[in-house]
Length: 260
Image 1 (cartoon, rainbow, N blue to C red):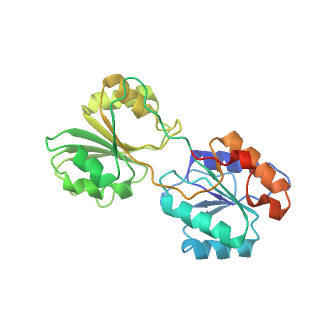
Image 2 (tube, helix red, strand yellow):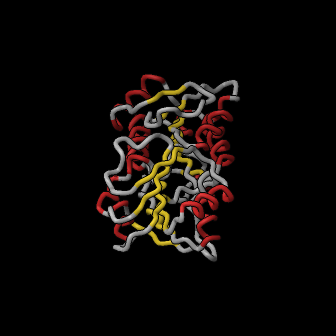
Image 3 (tube, rainbow, N blue to C red):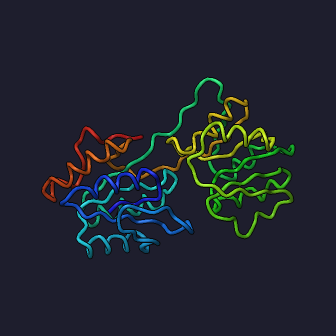
C-alpha cells in the first residue's frame, strides 16, 4: 500500500502495479474534491489513527507500506510508522529533498503559519499565499495585507480579511507563468511551504528573478525511518522488499537509511 497525495506516489504506484506479482493500493486523505485519476485502486479517507491503520494492514495482508505523502503530512507519517512497526510489515518513506537556496534567493524561514504571518510585518503588502486552503487561519491575525490565495479547491468559507482574491489551480506551474502572475498581481511577498520537487518550484524561480522575498514555513519533523529521495530509489527499495522473505523485508537495505 502506498500512502499518497503526491505526484511521486502516483508515478510509483504505476511502476509497481506493472509488476505481475504485486497488487498495489493507493491511500488518499480525501481532502481534495476532485483528485487526479490514479493508476491503481484507491482508498479515500482516514483509517482512524495508527490503530485503525494497523487493523487495515492486518486485515488486508499488506506486506509493504510506502509513505509517499506530502512532506508536511507529519501526523499521517507518524501514524504510518507506528502502524507498520506494530503490524511487523515492511515500511519506508519517499521524501522529496527540500529546496535549497541559491544565489539571488531572498528567503526567510518561519516555524509555522503564525510565525509566517508575523514575519510579513505591520506595513500592508500584496502577499501571495500558496499553503493550501486548510492552513490559512493564522493570516487572520494580519488583516492589513492584500492576499492572493491559490488552492486546488475553493476556500470555504473565505478568509475573513478585508482584501483577498482567490485562484484555483493544480500544478505543475512553470516559471514563465508564475513570473507573469507575480508581476501582473504586483506581488511583494510570497508565503509557501518548502515542498521540494519541480511541480511548484516555478514560483520560487520567478521570485528569485523578480527579487521578491519568500517566507518558507519549515518542514515538520518526520518519524525516523528508511527513506528514499527519488522515484527510482523508491522503486528499487520496493522491489528489494517485495522479493525478500517477510522477516527480511522489514526494512530496505541498510545503505539506504538516511535522512532527507
